Image 1 (spheres, rainbow, N blue to C red):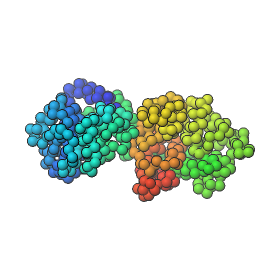
Image 2: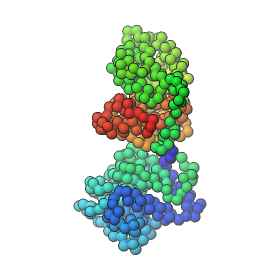
Image 3: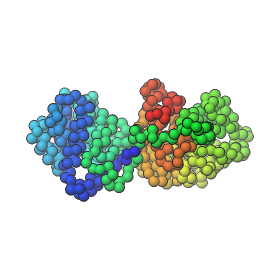
Image 4: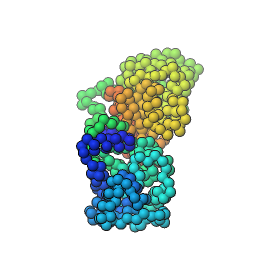
Length: 496
């Protein structure tokens, strides 16, 4: 498990470390530059010419130092700088690069094309930039992005906000980003997903445990297997999680089948689906492993005894889910009240969230529950425009927790999570999941995990990770466009 850090927190952490240990900043810069040179060796052939784009600050200083190290290792280095007078350690490393006979020029206008190089190192701006690049900087970024040459970004792709992940204007599209000490939050948020490329995090002398800054929790792939619930060799269906799902309605049997099949694939011992008569034949065909209990209706409205059937099913459940395709009719409200009072943790998704937004007397939910809104559902819960959700997802995450009173997954290209103590971000994803029905699969996975795990942040993290990994696995076989939500459910594996 690793933690992200915000740019301002990283700056304070570096300053405290250097002050208390008496270590000059130029040594940290040298370690960062060595990591950049190491990564370059994997991006282009040894001895290749590499173009280094250097700004006047610390990020540029990393670039100047890396150009010297790359040359010392037998490569050829060419620097394009945007200022002839860099400051601080950047100025020192520029002078050292000159002494090492690195070629340096300061173009007064954007060249028509890049020189013939094996790679470009982006060291224009660091994590402190929060505005759109302008002038020659913006032009250089566009030139590099159009070149087709492999790009390595130093700490963060220039033009990307290190806190929010938003690119307000032109930004470098990196093939590899080498960040330092801890992953910067913006690399995993919003536009960061598209601009960062392969992400590497390199040490720069600061001990891992230095400082008390706690950022977003991130699962490391090597830790996944040890964190997943273990299926006992002598267990039975009742010991592997009894799940109850209130899902589906006329015209939305697919949502019900996706959630139920994903729940089974994710390890649930028994899955009981509470459903209307119209959904029954589809579920019995599509998900034969699920048990269906039909909720009685009177003139197409749920009868009063439906709530009693739900309460009886929930009394024996280890986890539950409500919302996938259930519709928005008022006759559902008594059942929502039953689920709100369940002793087991409940996953609230889709239509249930829209009903909660309209019937706030059901809020807050018990702390053991979890809600899984996409930005539109989050906007309804917070009575905010979707643009506000997308503009500051971390702020929205905290607001959602305060609103619903329970754990939250804010779904997106890199889903965000929160419980009462910590926040997390899912480090992987795929556009193959950008299809209706993918959220139903996630809800099924989370419900199955929740039946066998404590009601904290970890099952949310594991569910998002397994969901994304299944999406990647399905897309590898069928392609991003050809992947259907059922393919994702069928691709769920506990072996990541």
